[in-house]
Length: 383
Ligand code: NZQ
Ligand code: ZN
Image (cartoon, rainbow, N blue to C red; front, side, top):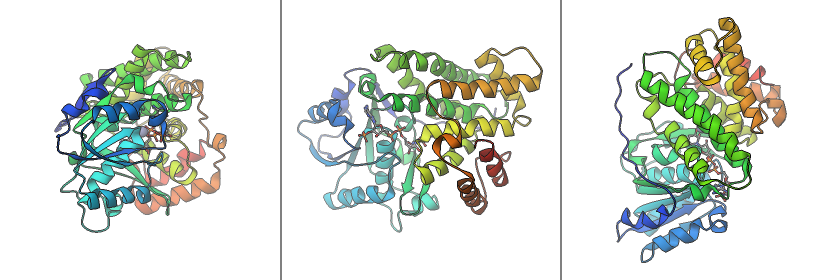
């Protein structure tokens, strides 16, 4: 196992009715900016629960944070935070609202061009405190200190992060997810699945605890995902398990001391930036291509994955690895995702543009086994 520092200070308030407790975690004299998206929280009762819990507080609202939140939109909120002297941000929504709010927290005290936080990973030395009420289990943003923001003008989607951006608390009430459309439930299952794969399906470093945690999350998603999708009536236990699985997939724990990749995410972000394809869908497109390309290098972990997740124990190494990748793609398809670029009208011209971006950037993920020159081949295999 490799050396690591583990730090995660997020107070998780898990379960039904927990929104009512947020006032225990926000200073009474705080000036709050409540951030949210396009209005789902007004239809499903979450908005009312938050307002009730914050009776007596000074609250300003900022709505309209879009999916794959825009830098341009978030900078409007930064203006409000600065002019109204807001000192607490409360994000109510999915990963986009949470990420967007983290960016607002970071940009408020930033001196200089705020885009540098994203473009150049400019250091952040101070941030506004924030809390979150999660309504979509997928990204893990509720228990990590990172985010992803898009500059609409240039179609650039970039990640940022800083320990100052861990939420002070996050409410995970599975009932808030009851109003999710099927498409977003699917996105959550697949995003969480690929988060685990980015940290697990790399190279062995003798980390049985991390491996078995990761495998436990994958198996939970494979069991609970289809179970939840099979019925139109949400089941509390099912939603609770999916929610916790998604949080555990990206709160740092399974990534400690192991080799993490994130190349699938980096390539996927470009597909979202250029074509607006849902984040999770981009991952389901890219991952099978990436694993196929790395079948040799990542062979040991692929064989472990084949056996422990898919019970594949017979056949040659090559056959078992191929079958495990095939089963993974079939799972994504079984929940309704089109795993080919052609399913989303993306062609060679777009691959050329994306590949050029990586050549200019000079890196893909965190491991040297995916080179910038591989991006075209990975995507061409997914046409
Ligand atoms: O805007 P509203 O009206 O709230 O509607 C949203 C949005 O249209 C809707 N929704 C959310 N909760 C709902 C609901 N609809 C009904 N009932 C509810 N309870 O769902 C739509 C999608 O929401 P969004 O927040 O965009 O989805 P998700 O949570 O999948 O977040 C995706 C974003 O997170 C980033 C992605 O790149 C993408 O920008 N990620 C963040 C990560 C992180 N911070 O660690 C890691 C991930 O890999 C990912 O990159
Ligand atoms: Zn993701």
